[in-house]
Amino acid sequence: MTVLHEVADVKRPPEEVYDYVSDFTTTVEWDATAIAARKLTPGVVAVGTQFEVECALPVSSVVLRYTVKELKPNKLIVLSGSSKFFDIEDTISFSELPGGTRIDYRAEFFFKPLVSTIAEFSKTGLEKMGRESVVGLARALKDNFPLKKPTSADKVADKLVLPALSLFSRLGYKLGRKRFHPMTASVKHKHMVVTGASAGLGYATAQQLARRGVNLTLIMRDQAKAEKVVSDLQAETGNSNIRFELADLSLITDVNSLIKRMKKRGQPIDVLVNNAGALFNPRSETREGLEQSFALLLLSPYCLTEGLKPLLLMASSPRVINVVSGGMYSESLKVEDLIAPDNGTYSGSVAYARQKRALMVLTQEWASEWETEGIIVNAMHPGWADTPGVRSALPQFRKITKRVLRSSEEGADTIVWLAVATEAGSVSGKLFLDRAEHATHLVKKTRESGQETEKLMRFLASNRVSADGVQ
Image 1: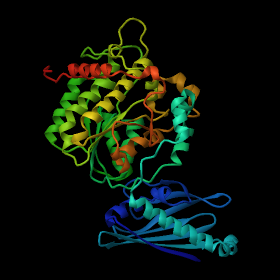
Image 2: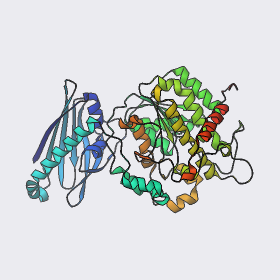
Image 3: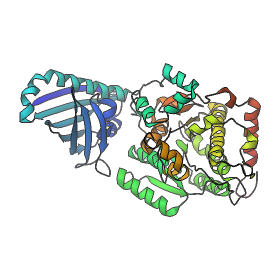
Image 4: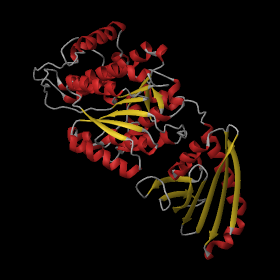
């Protein structure tokens, strides 16, 4: 048997340290040997919960299956793990210090007979890995990471269209992930609102936030789907603080009714994620007479965010996250083109890109206007993600690119980061891909003028009609 024993002190309360460590999927953020980790059993972490962690070895890798043996909230976690080379028992205890927590980590390795002799020679290496892991955990919990600066490769990519587009792929995510910092900020019990949460990016975002103990309000339009989503998320994560509100966000009367209901509840909103979207072919209008792309993708998030602003201001450090699209890079802001005319030239993908360009401009305007009020507003684009929306609206695109498409979880990662990470609250009015700031334009001809931006803001304000028809 080989025993590793390390101690580290961190300036975080025991509850936050325990919450972070007890979800053992976080090992990939602080253990240098961990390549991947996932939770195998649904529900809240409890005795019997299982995790699978893949760890790197000098010449290969090993998969460890961990089972939680003992839990004492905020005090103790004991896990037993098994692999083809060794069994392991990890005991992690937490004791309160003035202004912080002491983490006591003990790992006992029981090597299988065929590798026990080699293990004796590798003891020094194991001890080094143990020290580095605990140092990594302490560093993660310190949570003072800087924003990622664009690399020279990022800057080149943002000036050249094809390299920039390549970053939208799964490979782009894998490259970006190498520079990710841990997300250890506690968002437990914070109230976050996510629109379009029934599938794709919205569901993946809600899933990750629910795991972190967030109090979630999910906006969906179909009651049966909404009930299933909430039930599934509660069962999977053990988080019971998940509710839904019904609204067809392409209808401004629905948006305003939603605003009224949420204002009546009076619950402060820490984060608002404007994610709901769809690509429409052929052109259609809502029953309110608005072109559907404009109504859902631009006017709706504008009205919703403006309407919920009082609840955002009630939070200590509110954030708004607008989900845009790489398609916006092909379009410039022309307000007269936002409501596509019915002249036989309509393209759903072009209409989508135009609304997302306008939403990016709106993001920058809100960030500037609301800076003194403390509301952080940023945009992100998810890259090319294999979502139900892509499968239904862009079947040919998916057929060509399906081998390089990201998963919904990979596409949603930056939404979660913008909602959770401490460093993401230090900047406003920016565009992010894979947790890194990127240029909002790839070519000069798509840059908007100040006059066009002012025109957009007047146009949106003039279309913001309340449920009773009063502007």
